[in-house]
Image (cartoon, helix red, strand yellow):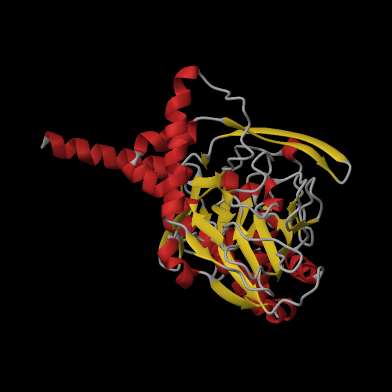
Length: 411
């Protein structure tokens, strides 16, 4: 009996507390607990914090509709704003705040931004970034989509499909490209704009004996990421093959480092931790078109975020500096882990020869790429036109196309 009485007293106390925080509702399916409003939307019970709702008021006093930017005066923002009245209808909810201000929110807008794990995952995959799918060499022919140059240039549907495939798998091919040094420009313009480096807006990849970069040789080019010495490294590499060598060799090699990193994490966890925790120095020193450069940047080989998800790979044997910014005891273990990473990329890589008229496009901060040795002579040459574009521009174009093609507003 004593236990039952205590349980009854506890229930009465909770009821009184709920009554103290309850609001005036003109329609059901909504109530307030503590610092949040709870709404029933499409059969889901969803909580929305008061402070978040007030911060995201969509009225023209708080949010500029054409700039799609918050304009409320933060110096006057009350972190403890409380609603005094909530009215929910079929498509929206209206909230009156304790300062008399009124906000209205579409229910579908709220649901898409709600705080459940499932809905937040939906937001990430539908709008933020397409999820990545890892692969190894034997899967390459299945995942590397073939796209038509003219279709990408002329239709949004083809552009969207190409960019989504590229962001998912990290690689794609564009065929039927005109044999012109400027043909790649139309692709860049469809996405956004190129990223300029000290090698220019575009660069020519062909055999140059007295070169400023070992990529401009006909000898074997070991797998690497381009420009790891940039703090903000170019995200996407585009290589338009104008002329392909007739000699043996010249094949491209590619490997998915997200697959390699996951493999190391499972099978070689100690080496994985060394490559994620140890900063090394990447460098590029020289002169290009009269411009002197001396680039240095420190970062691990495998860069991970707070959830231990890989977001950037740095790897280049030629462009790793000679200074090791760490304790001497770590040098040998780091070299062993680095060599293991290199061998695993070789083991799980794909090899193929790009045809003239094709643009090879790949994720420069996810994939390693290289090229086999070939013979270069006056009668037998190999020439590619290269350019970079940032992932920010790719993702921006993807979202814009999604809104346009689906005729859906996410704001």
